[in-house]
Image (cartoon, rainbow, N blue to C red):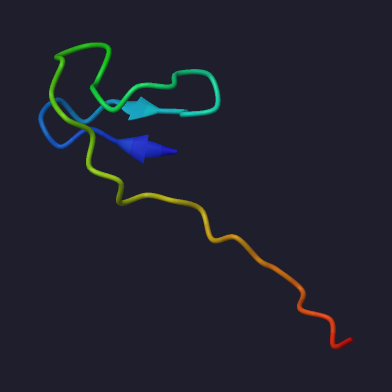
Length: 43
């Protein structure tokens, strides 16, 4: 989930693939990114 800095709307970028907020057209700041956990396996 991403949060717009201007209006505070939460945008799910899996459904909305653009870097501007759909409500106020302000550029989305990518701050509330969920942590991606990767398991690294040795070869």
